[in-house]
Image 1 (tube, rainbow, N blue to C red):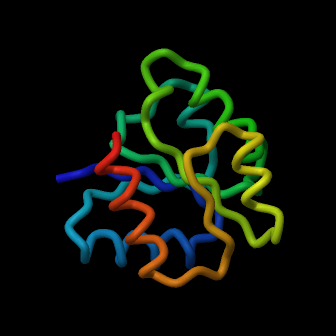
Image 2: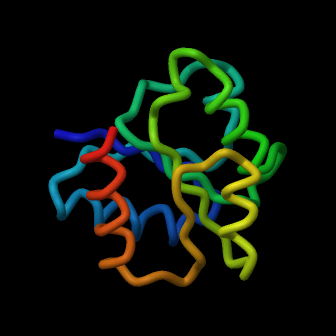
Image 3: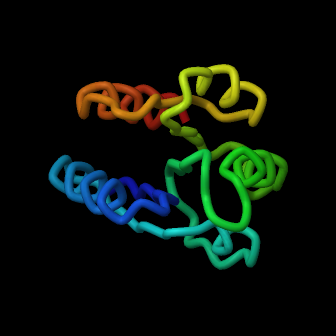
Length: 119
């Protein structure tokens, strides 16, 4: 079972994504802020989904940190945001994919399948 970690401060979005992904057979762990990455307390996922706007530290900084570490640099990361320039922001953050909120569940599932099959 593939393990996906979601870092999202909006409880509704986090819960909804968790339910969707669990219904597709993924193990999901959710966090409301990025301190788990900064404190190196993260259980290694197969894929990480990070919201761009988080309390304390933004998702772009978290993504760059995650991608700069030898143990985590090859784990796919999806950066998500309501911002229309999320694709460019994701590229700048070294993310492997991006999702603009609101997004369709099928778009998320297709991206996950693509990234998890190529990693």
